[in-house]
Length: 577
Image (cartoon, rainbow, N blue to C red; front, side, top):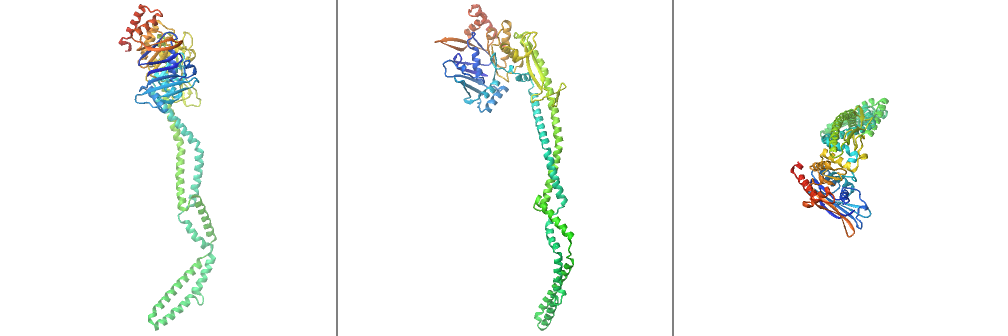
């Protein structure tokens, strides 16, 4: 809620300060007194455009300050989140002080709770705090992009839209995952082909640990089989077969040692040792004979081992340092192949998951669309009644819903494929015709400033959305009306002020008399300079102002009596019931 507005050197305002309160705040004064200028200054602290033309003549700068109390409602919480994300601290008092300075060069500085801020941050937060409805203000009502949100608020679709947004988010992620999976299918196929080749190459080799060492031991024998047989035969001859062989001479030595032992029994051990040497020589000779007989040249076996050794060396080079390492590589390869095979099945799972999410998102979108359709009819009916009460009898307000076609889309509504967004498939725009018999046209192209204010007043009365935007400003909402309609406008404003803080510029005593707070604005000339001022009106001062509004320049006793009667009637407790 807006608590304080302070203005210095802005247009015809020299210095002005006003404290607003909850409920209905009325600003009145003669034409040209500067009532709308006050709201132009307020708009500056909501992120409005600054310009050198706003500075009071002769001043060095214009300064506008506002003090807002951020409510704990969704709108206040949204504004606070925007501020805190921009680095603006909001204390436990939930106050926001906005100060904006405008220089003669047209530049401006923004301070948010004492810290420099940006117009973007201010505008984003300001949209959640104040909505200004008037001929020169930027209004959500004129932006078709905002119409769907207004309809959703009326329909109370907050929970359904949250579920739909979550479903669409999950669907988009599933679609991205499926696309990534499809983009990687070729790479996975190439990888799987390489892994299968490697696995088959290792499996065909039928490796066993230690095989290379065994081949390395056998190959030298095969390569030198003839030489080994010849050498073993020659050694056999020398050990046993040839004349004067080692065995023959050892036999002679043994016999000689036997004769020696006969003469010296203490040396009998030598004969035993000679017998042992002879037995060893004969055993070695037998082994050499057998070795020479078995050392045959086997070209086929040699070729087989040479090829096997080359294969093992190649596999070791590709896949590891030994047969055990190659077998470990084979195990890892099979695991990855199994994983890739599972990923191939993953495409079916991803597609099934996407289809489930499509069905859920489509169901929610169709339900939201149907709820919007029903709410649009109800809104149009409520607006027709409200506009008639506000002096726009015969005016037509129409909420038009449409869908953007998407031939490639999956969602069908009304037999057509339509585009699905996070907020559903509907596009919404308000149409309006102020005159009976004229077809409704887009709101921004046909409504005047006064009509827009009454449209928004009727809409706010129907929506009752004070939890979203706490402060509403109506500038010249009563333009071109009077009599009984004026009373209805006042009552509508009063009704809306039950859920909002309402600030209204009015020329109607029927409206001013209903206000919780009444401020009078006047323009004076002093020392050749014109300046606007504002003051709260109570007691007789308020009676005089209400009487002036009803009677004009000449305030008669009858006018005063009527003003008092209006104020007494407005103060009845039932008025806010």
